[in-house]
Length: 270
Ligand SMILES: Cc1cc2nc3c(=O)[nH]c(=O)nc-3n(C[C@H](O)[C@H](O)[C@H](O)COP(=O)(O)O)c2cc1C
Image (cartoon, rainbow, N blue to C red; front, side, top):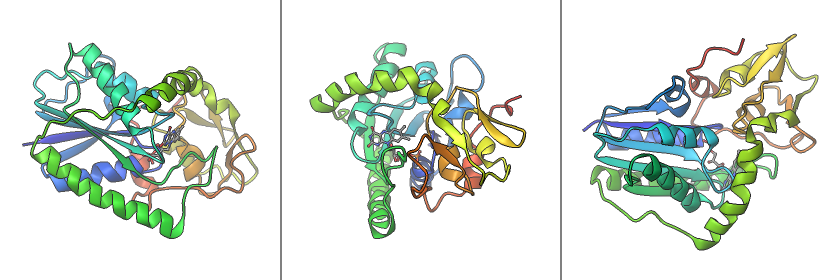
């Protein structure tokens, strides 16, 4: 039976999980959430088995994934699951948020299963992403977990969506603050003299939030804070305030910049 996996990814963790899951499940296509949301109106998958893979942002889901979930038409979908990739914790509250949005828009039809996968954390504004053996160990563990998830999905097993009271409380405080400022968070971003005007930042932005003006990136304030522009700039020329200069950049080692460029279905910002 055909499966469609929708994904959102800034630095490749969620895309890597979506790709491995697709291979393990078989007969599966992956579609970027950014492409699926380009046109207005309901999003109809047209298959019976659907998955959503995205990173955790401030114990919740990216703003674009929340919009996507509210527009997803689950009529005809028999099995729906989600995978949250996260640097630390926050997966259960993100799953709960996703489940609640789906139930609200689909008359109590929510997730049939939900999983949280620990991956290298990419929130460069607060910490250095893990490197070396630590990073490789995390990626190996996640590869093993994907095989387990694939088994659950192929068997279409239904499970209770995990919950955590502590995470719910943190989510209630942190997430609305994140959501309230996320689109404007690019006002902190700047570019330094290392910029070569290559345009990678423009192409890797899933929501086409960047255009080049005079050869330099300008941000358009519909940012999702995925950090792709900062993390994937080949010259490491993009910074967020004083917090990112000198910090190691992160990209999932199995995902190329070219793959991340293919995420946005939107026309280039004019
Ligand atoms: C804006 C932002 C907020 C984040 N918040 C959390 C969080 O609350 N909990 C967590 O465990 N990881 C958090 N992370 C880390 C990512 O969820 C994690 O590294 C994820 O796997 C990145 O996926 P991607 O490579 O597909 O973008 C955050 C990352 C970003 C960019």
